[in-house]
Image (cartoon, rainbow, N blue to C red; front, side, top):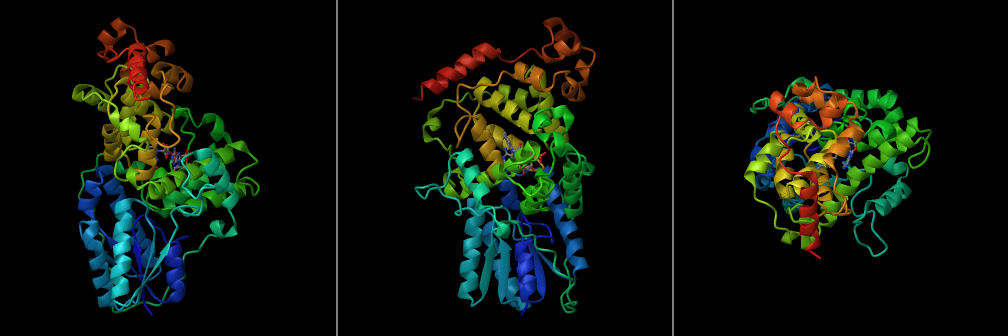
Length: 467
Ligand code: FAD
């Protein structure tokens, strides 16, 4: 019997649980739902949308190779998806629907409703946990609760890795043509291209290439160099993982293979990278275990009482990279110009906004989502609440990064800084971190908008008063 596979954030034919299982059961028809309005309401900006559409096109080509017809629906909102997908199943005479789970609360509601409608209509739905290594719910504390702290989660995660969680599903073989069913064309993204598309070619081939290049070279120095933004020592796989152009399992098994069969011990560069894949899982588990996170509530509820400063002017200076702290400013320019920001700098800029400027992390979270190609609720919200000290396993509120110290430590020669702030190129290495007042005037580079010490004291007072 015909099987319908609904692709959402799993845009690949290789190692895709839903597709692999569907193909075992019968000829496959694929469907995608272009819920533009919903994605916009979730805060995704043009960079991500463009990447998503280009990802759908790449998937269409891969499906075409397998003779799998692709149907394109445009229900605009999640709420209209269940009915639209059911109608398609009826018209194509598909008894079974398969999909890989998404973990945000709106996504889960959409999927639960789909299951309900299909059941009511006498059809079945098969769901898979494919976007994470270990499914949410499989790792719980001794009290049967979801983990709130990463380290014990990570220990349990390592223990839970077994053959089943590491098995790769090959892409199905080319099926016999379903002659009566034509593929729909994936529309081109109608978003203006904010960043150069060639920075982020979409699709599995590119993703697998990036994995191979990373493990072949940079992975060897990952632990030592991952915090130095100028070194480009990380994999840059995040956009590809966020939309499932590659599976986390593929990344993990390749890293384990490189590490002589080990996940938790062996080369500490590789284990350190593997632990980032665990962080990724952790934040997806948090989404399921603590739905308030999807509702934009702080994880630590007492932090709801923080009186954030409502300074639109300071927020604008931060967004535009005009804070007068070169590393912060260069990082914000990296985000806006490339749609991606290095992890160390995400922490530095997020902490600067929430601690030095004492501006609500929701503002920063939204600005990141608007620009990131890899923008994803779990990791973005997790990272913001970590930096703002409002989250699970968050940075303690009194540990406030000094942006100038971070700059000297992680960009010692100021090479990252001058890449994005070329006006500072002629300064000595020392002054790239901290231009003098006259250098600032001469180079039209802004004065610092807050004094580090005073801002730090203000943040400490604010957080202390919550106790
Ligand atoms: P690598 O160092 O090569 O790591 C490999 C993979 O592990 C990444 O591709 C990513 O999927 C995962 N990973 C790495 N670090 C983390 C982490 N801290 N949390 C969860 N997963 C991680 N990541 C996103 O994918 N989307 C976001 O929207 C996002 N927003 C963030 C916001 C803030 C404020 C912070 C502090 C972090 C955020 N991160 C986000 C996590 C992290 O910064 C990026 O995943 C990482 O920089 C991506 O670069 P990479 O692919 O080269 O990572």
